Length: 141
Image (tube, rainbow, N blue to C red; front, side):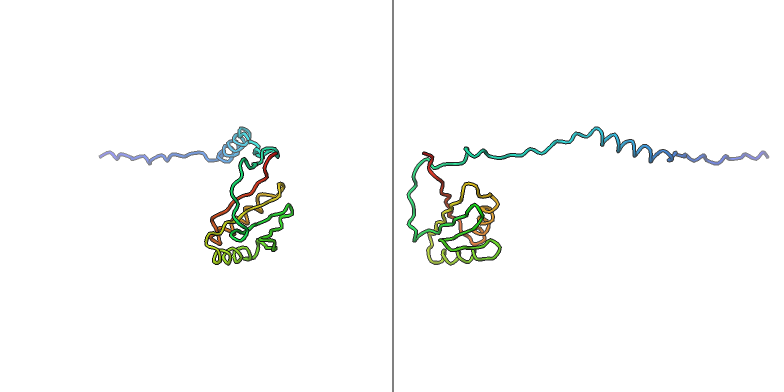
């Protein structure tokens, strides 16, 4: 009887020697073809700030708390200095809210005050659960 020889299977061999070169070329291609967009800077021109168009009836000083923020970011609540870092704003507003249930907070800031300072005080007012806030602006003559 004749013997039949079974040939061994030939394994598929994928060449991997150029894989690093291909990866480098792809990386180089994407680096060269990527378009970088410069971030736009948005700002509001100084002459576009809001001005009051009508007089709103003011609440008496006894029923409100006035917050002044100077250009140097000094915070004054009813003419007493306060600081954002400690809880003095929260304590002052909670004490005023207990005394006056219809407390209205009036904001007055310098024209050149950074918004970051206003935002920090607004966050403290939110922590103190003071929701009735009025921003006072100058009338444009």
